[in-house]
Image (cartoon, rainbow, N blue to C red; front, side, top):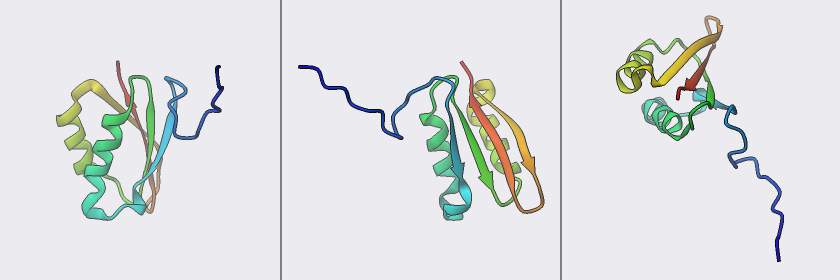
Length: 91
C-alpha cells in the first residue's frame, strides 16, 4: 500500500528555493551562530534572504573567511533601519 504524504512547509522541495531568515527576532548574542547554522543547512543552489536591523559588515567578513566562494551574497534592500541580503549557496 502506498500513501501519498502532502508536502509540508519544512520539506525540501526545490533546489532553487529561497528561505527567509529574519535575524531581528534572534537575540544578538546568538545571531552569528544561528546564521552559520542556517547557511550550513542550505543545499547547493538554495538561498536565504537575510533581514537585519543594521548592515552586518563584521558578519560578512566572517562569512568570507568561513565559506570563501561557497556563499555568494547580494544586497536586496539597504535602508538606515533594515538590511535585506540574499545569501546563495554555490555548487
